[in-house]
Length: 319
Image 1: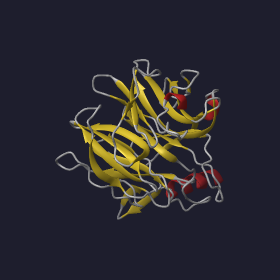
Image 2 (image 1 turned 180 degrees about the horizontal axis):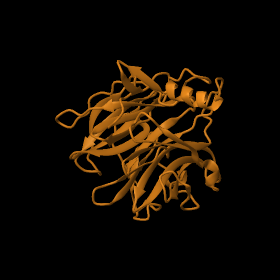
Image 3 (image 1 turned 120 degrees about the horizontal axis):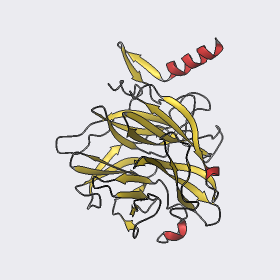
């Protein structure tokens, strides 16, 4: 009986009833701290991959060791799979399970993640692979895909963060990433090797958190700007640009210094998935204790995006 009540409490804590309608309360999870969301629609289901904040109230930096997986068929009720990948799965990495992104290609699922390299100074990007969107995942290379010695145009050692993969309509895959320097490169068809040189992007006031999506005839590149971070975006008719800056998309996210987004279309609607520091359950929210939220995203007739309205009610079930 205690287990039944516990599960009911978790459901009620993440679901809100307004005028007879069911909403996914924001943050959508209150029993675990989640950050840096990356969503993927596959076979009629939304799979959500997140970082896992474990910092206590008095922490002054991130405490992150693994990544979590969730799924939903209505954007309100979420199935939890727990941690499906950790820093320990990359023998060449030593710490810091930071932002990642999963993409499907030819029946396999590739999870690009940020970790701190064990032998090369700085952060690096690794890639894991699985035959299912929920794993099990394993290191696809046995080495870093991108390491700090490959990007020497900055003096900082954290410029290789936040990988985001995108597969264009012609099947060509790309990887976008960066901190203070936005970058992209083609991926080979095996999805675990770069295909050619690393390119720079021209984005005003870029901080981090690149995300690329396509809607209609336009490509959209959104990213965190400033610090504390807002989310800005640019548009293009080509995945390789030129990109036209369009302004702020999302304002400061609660009491979180960072602002990391994922944008998907699902069942006829568009969704903006992000994190804030808004959870009020122990150990309470903050810049190092973040929680994922979801609100609807709307396009104007000319393809530009309306500014996101962050809500505590969240979204209605997708049908």
